[in-house]
Image 1 (cartoon, chains in turn blue, brown):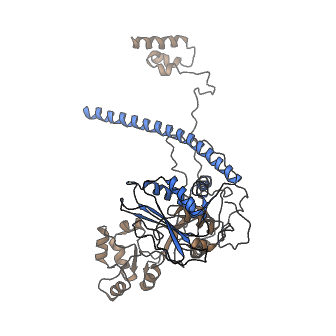
Image 2 (tube, helix red, strand yellow):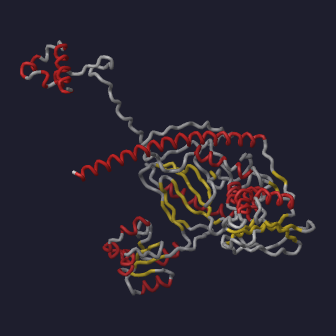
Image 3 (tube, chains in turn orange, yellow):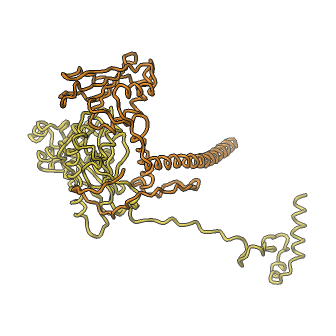
Length: 244
Length: 305
């Protein structure tokens, strides 16, 4: 998130020091926790800055990747309809909704993208694209908001609008995206060199966390084994006592 | 066999020991009967005079008086519209009335001492599920009035009884000053306290003018500082940037006045403001409003979700 200097009115002030201009990538450390020592005495206030920043860096994935594309001006709105679960060919549309639609929404915040999820597993699965005809001015329309109960049916096109419907049933999300890009003529967003470097950093971080997770898993296993042995010994002792 | 060996060993030590100070013991009790006294294990390799490794005292954990405050320089802070753009992308396809914007205000504050707690009426309220119960003398004109004002449960002993049985059909409880004594006698603090429902003069829920209090409660929301953070739902996903900024502004103003009212002996200051949604990540706000991307206008963030 590059911050540009602009004269904007601050609508609230915090008492913090001015932040450094360039965010420095923190070097991940292998923190070895002491078994049995849980974070009981640590403040439960808010998660630490570095940890939160690492999570936040994953928002790169919403700026870049399959689906990150700028739609042309004549796309007025998008409507999706599919069932809640994957049975009967609804996996592709679900993946498209989960992985590609957020990216499209990020790059095209003004285009309404309405999702209608239904309980009817054998129902249709469609992607409706609405286009402005003839490049005339803004088209006025009313739009239902997204629903998880099947209330947001695809609206009829208004005057000066045409609809292209793509059937998504039994298709993979990649194919749906390809069809989408071909039909709309959207321009994919390519990462800048800076973003590419950030992506690389992020991949490295994930690799590191894999190692860390393995260490943690082993420690936890050892802790559990010890606890189980203790519990067993205790129960045996109790049984002996009861036997006497 | 083992016992004879042990005896022999202590005998052998006896013969090797040249200390003269222990002759006293020898004179009374044969040494091999009290081997521990007779042969103190002296370890020469371990250093220190007393012999043996010294056990290190367990490290004492450092305790802090204040909640931890982080250096915010590694945090990318964004303007309100930028945060909204990201969050709207995360929440695409969700029902706009069920997804909420939330704000967390981190404070620089002591772990003990006064906490910030107040009631606020947001410029754009969005909560409609406030159900109020009123404790007042049964079948009095007051009770009738409370019912007309929209209280879901009214009464004294009948209300206490239903609370004791765990039947709590309300989320706000007001007590009239006439019934204060009855409330104290009823002994229901154990049931209501953990839910934050117990009426008290401090929270202005014991009142003589419950008409004003009900009016204040409907469409009003409470916030309080827990573990040094004030967390509060601030709007629905369907809100426009200006609506959300109005709400945030109002909240910040009230929190600031609350902070100023705190005694100077206690640390209390604003640290960080984080905006998130029900399913989205948290964005640290920098206090600005406009989007940083030239191509994005404020109007773009107002489309139907």
